[in-house]
Image (cartoon, rainbow over all chains, first blue to last red):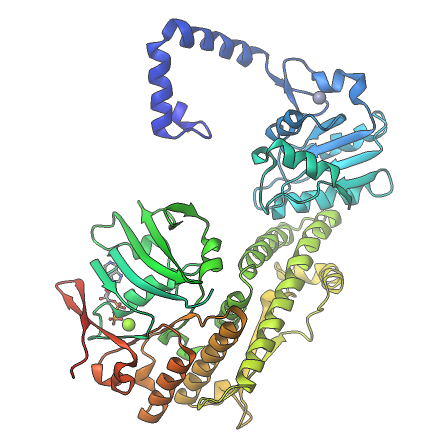
Length: 185
Length: 371
Ligand SMILES: Nc1ncnc2c1ncn2[C@@H]1O[C@H](COP(=O)(O)OP(=O)(O)O)[C@@H](O)[C@H]1O
Ligand SMILES: [Mg+2]
Ligand SMILES: [Zn+2]
């Protein structure tokens, strides 16, 4: 089971499992309790798609985060990467993927309709696209920018980002620089 | 990138080679031996020292020595810009080839910063008479040699195209989705077109300025229906305008993926496809040499050149002329032929390898020149 997790090979999975069994009381039991809690309570925020323990996540609940800026990311890992850097003070919208005709993922499979319905109520003035520099990411960015045209200003993270580079892999400084140097699309 | 050449090459479980290790210097390498001995396999190994799938366009799993089929490794010392780099390629359990440079795992594209490899192989003999696809690939390899970023651009373009073709086949009518994909196609497509034109211009200049005994080929880029819109905006508009036509066809009908390369034997004004077999070959050699000269001017070093079975098609005068031009260029050219006599005119300007087959395993020996 462990070896099937992303980022863990069979070797590191075996080592992790052995470690947990050897330290049953110290590691395994507490971990299994935490995991059970997570399994019972973790859910996607109905508003933005972030992962939390309530129907509406902390960021969406925090009125201070309603500053007129909304950052669009592909998945929750990207949101966390942005949060780690601490530079972005607005709200997020997690698409849950990118447009891909070959994988049968269209606008309705992503949270694009939900995004459109948030613009007015949350007084969004600027949408910042933080999508990957892949063809799918850029197609999705173009699609959203097109749909938002005339409603809000749309900007995109400056691509000091390596081509095909994913947000999740960037360090905080790079993310900060990319956000500061964002440009209109 | 000056002084580009390989000095050592080791093949392990690569096609017919069980364990082959050779040392060479920067001079051309003449390789001879009977049919099926393993000469082309050796050249294929060298072709891996540039980004891509090598000169046979084969998958890594096809290169593994059968029947063992465990994995293979090709390593070598690549000299580039006065520095020696240890470059290794390996594939295990049918996985794609992995590249390492000086002990560190590297992306294939990193090879493009160290080296350039050009090749001419017998399957290209019918290039001028067969489908446009082969000519496009030929053109794109030449283009890639000038502009390594052309490879990623082509992959991105192909990806966006597959996406759009799927929308067309599924009869999706979301205009915004098409527009988003067409923006990617136009951006990459216009750049691809521009890179190709730049490469053709570099080849034209290299042919014009050269003293060569090979015939000049005029090359022209054509597109099946009229002209390809050559700016990003024009291409995007043309794609949008073509949607309903494309939906009926179930695929994208305009763009650089529909390009063709028309060659003409300049001096005679005859289309390459109507030339004699020997003339067609001569035109290809002329282009490879022009490509190599243009690169030498660009990079300060000629590329590594692979000429598989080239000598066989040329008469003695032409053969001698080819050798003279390669030596003048200073390229490490790896050439194969069935007889040692084919390489006689090279004298001591080249080193020689003799390849033979022994019960399904290739043997390679370095042959000294007899005084
Ligand atoms: N994956 C493989 N495993 C073992 N032998 C192979 C493999 N691929 C090709 N061969 C064999 O290698 C031999 C030599 O091929 P090649 O290098 O093309 O010969 P030539 O010397 O005529 O250029 C052929 O007999 C072919 O069957
Ligand atoms: Mg051969
Ligand atoms: Zn939320």
